[in-house]
Image (cartoon, rainbow, N blue to C red; front, side, top):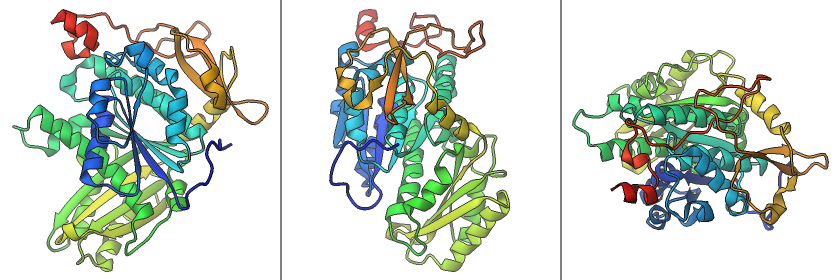
Length: 414
């Protein structure tokens, strides 16, 4: 059931992009400055200083009481609690969206912990919810990798589709002497490309047009997705760009075979021919499942004269989408059902780690609260076999880098 909080809805599909945490906020900042149009930008962060420097028109400081604006200290539990503290603000920001992109860099505190909460709220508000996330570089350490895996699993249970960009694979596409800052910038650009490709299919008139219903058919309840991009110039550029896209390093160890849904986005200059688009589409169609739901569109960009950029997003590789629908309909450990519209009346408890959102008997939305349960990252189960949310201990160890420590603790350490 869709929750109607606002009046006077705008015609056409409303797309909102919310960047969560440092990585997600940086990616959104780049999208804003690049001039990406047709979407509304929001950032949510626990770091007040970073938030103030962001160019997004709507900025949400979450967990003000909990973190005092000093960040989550690479602890996903703090990130989750911060999102729960300001749920009403998040709902207000997402209200009215037909489609919500939740973008974040997994592995840290705010993004890893808060993104699943925010994505769950977007889904319950009735939006087609797509997470576009990066997994950390290997040099960021095992701890971040483990936290990223846990955060990804939580996201898969709350969104329609998850597009995962493995940062390590980006290393194969950049020069060996690329700086750390430039490497993260490349990761941000890939997140931008994914959102740009999908939003343009809906909003930008082109040689071949698609609408929101087409995209929704491909991405609703489809679970994990993969994305590949390819660029080519010269003769046979359409075919070459398509081949590069389906063999892109971003596909990690996966490929488009077996995909049940495929979105193909072709961008070229004014010299882009319909025959080139048809050739590219044929290459992709031959690589995917014969019964796949296949949609494609093309857009002319005057700045792309002489070249062709192809983005392929393939969905429907697993059954997590149907499981997510069931998981959202059944809540566990319900202590206090709370009407979502009146969530501000609920006093936050610092021991609350997460909230499951479920449909109540009256057809509305309820939030169940549960106590923080500390478990190792391995995701051990209880004696009854039910899986519980992993929570990361913030104690320092020899392998932990200083940047993983909250700002206020780091200052003392320095």
